[in-house]
Image (cartoon, rainbow, N blue to C red):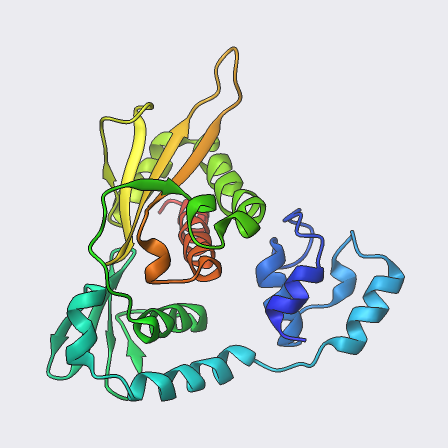
Amino acid sequence: MNAIELYKRLPKKNCGECSQKKCMPFAFSLIKGEAELSECPFLTEDEVNELKEKIVHSDWREALILRLREDVRRIDFSGVAAHIGADLQDGTLLLKCMGREFAIDASGEVSTKGHITPWMKILLLHYIKIGGSAELSGKWVSFSELKSGMVKASSFTRECEEPLRAVFDSDVQKAGSMLERFGAEKQEGFPTSHAWHIVLLPKIPVMLLYWPADSEFASKVKILFDSTADRFLDVESIMFLVEGLVYNIEAALSRPVT
């Protein structure tokens, strides 16, 4: 059982009771042997015992990165660079993701200034491997309208839109400023004054819309994608990409001001 399979068996309540605070990183930590199933208050004793028997402690992410690097080695970068919105310099692809620049060499090695997580490496290598080719349509659609998005729509709402709504509810001005640090730009012409455009990957632009609560309605968040997004990443990867953005905003806002 890998981390994704384990995650599907967890309650997915993101209650904050475990050491990792959310179910997805909790699943990763369980696989790596850095957390215990008993930390989850929603698992019964029988469920804990059943899952213990199925967990094999290993960092599956590193094995996946190695496989993806093998795939990327076979790709002619000159043939995909323009299609995926990357620059090619001396045989190395340069890609921007959430305002940061990453370099991917011909061997599939991913580098950047500062820390890079295994999951970011997986996303970037997967993006290159898919090698999508399409002009951005300029048509904004919901996650459920993407290919296979309907199947994952409730998960996307729970794991991406609802946590982002909570971030905006706590302090929309600070959250907006943090978004802009990640490269987002405030937008007009939408049915809310709180609208930001951010390019998560060169061919994965996203529109974030937030409506504050009023006397009649609760607050709401809607995340929109260019209709071509599913040609460059599958919906599971798109969901994890947005989760990464939300996590980065939460982490940045939680740091003490010095």
